[in-house]
Length: 88
Image (cartoon, rainbow, N blue to C red):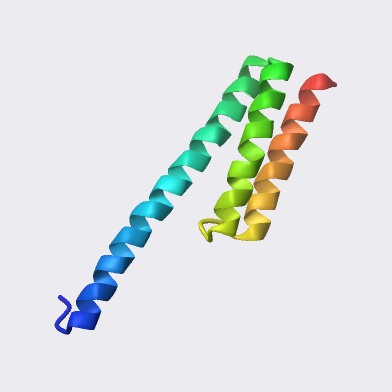
């Protein structure tokens, strides 16, 4: 348990930050899930729209430090490749 007032404040800040990051991560995962569900159904137009909505959300998570930049780029790239594969 934190003893000093600064350590107590740091604990509060970490808890608040963690809550924000969890919310951002959860929101991003929801967008990714929508894309994956659209891919599973095989609906090209819905999958493309879902990807279009998910892409900025994933990049925003990277900007805010929830994900690493390269991880975000990889996720977007792999989702885009899977959506593109539906058209072929």
